[in-house]
Amino acid sequence: MKQQKEKQLIIIDGIPGSGKTTMATHISGKLTDLGVSNRLFVELEENHPLMLKDVKYESLSTDEGADTFIAELEACYAAFVQDRLNQEEQITIIESVMLQDVISVSHLCGMDRGKLHQLAISLQRLLEPLNPALIYYYHFDVEGQWRFICGVRGNEWGPVSLHTDEDFKEAGEVWSRAQVFVRAAVDEWTIPKLIIENRDYLWDQNTERAEQFLAELLGSGNSACV
Image (cartoon, rainbow, N blue to C red; front, side):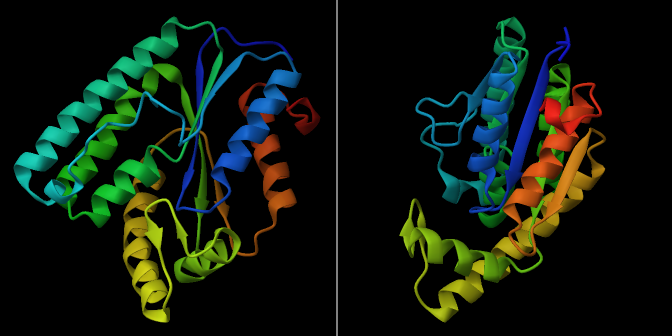
């Protein structure tokens, strides 16, 4: 594959348990096998450059708390972009940290919708120098997704603790509302994107679609190149 001189950012995002980390790791490995230099930042990486520390999420519903969070996050993203432009790797891959961990979580925490919409636009603009492309997992049955992933991972993992039918119903409702907001932001974002409507957990098919998308993104019509 002919390597591009321009940097490329690949964002893989969606609600928890969508398969983002698995997909990101797969893509990074494929690129490495092809000799394409890349850097993968998984969500749980220690000292992640896009994860703010000591965030008071309960304050995001206030103007002061939201404004402080937005200013710190914008500075974080600006520094990340500058660092990646200065690094040797051609491609940077991030998963979960933008749409799930920032936009969705801010929505869940009650941030003013106008502020949150402007934050989404601001982060999109800040990432422009890295030529971003997006693979986004969208779920039609969010409650079903929570039940599925808890069946795989257990009822308690990370900040998640879901046990009763009422727990799953509530999680489905609040994350559905957040996903509607995120999907609108995704649809407005004029970058190359692949939206995977994750109805039936067709992992092999989804991987093939992602490989084809990246092959076209990187200048090849042959999915075997990625």
